[in-house]
Length: 292
Image 1 (cartoon, helix red, strand yellow):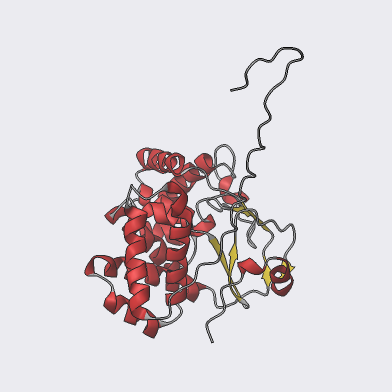
Image 2: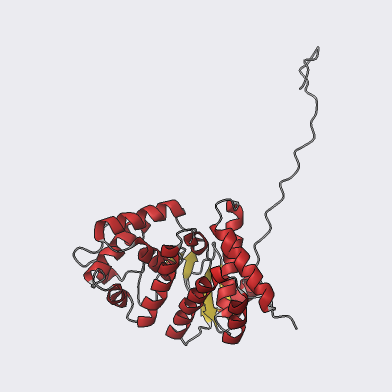
């Protein structure tokens, strides 16, 4: 404490506070080469992401590694089977469903683009708010909230993608403006998470989702593979709602010809850009090189 001095007011000098250490930029996760090590890491991730004691600031990196492991394994059936064989029984079915869902999406799109998209990647709404939106929609329509969460995940990464699709679909649940304008479907703002989730539930009802959710999902995206993937993710959440914590923290990845690019929050492209040029500007978005 500074003590009063006679004469002009003085104060003892204090050293300036230490400069805050800037946060380290996040890195693209790596996947162990050995199946046994991958299995150990994956089992640990599944446990940590479901554990309420896991510090919140660790969840993004833990979930991102979980996501990347499944994306890498989905491309190599021999390698993924070796990992599955060494997983504890508790996690084997979980991993199988993750891999099946990812492979369904890979089967839907054979084309791998050479340009990154004209999107913005933004933070999603907090998970408790999204859960409230899903549950409100289920109460109003009867469409299970886990299905709505899975649709939100696969369409825009829980609202991270702020952009317009090639087909002109918009907002966190990717509605065509013409569909949004149908009587009884869209109310409010197509880009608002609450409004879009409620509208998605109403649309699934209109497309027969209460009698047959696969039929409703086919109306959402005309592919049986789409419905299969959505319902696989929904089954994980139904089995253990804590599984949603990991899915919520998944990042946006873009399966380009040059590799599986990570588009982090803060990504913003007003126009498509060649991937090679984008990677010159943002090399951290590229997957790590395989060890030689």
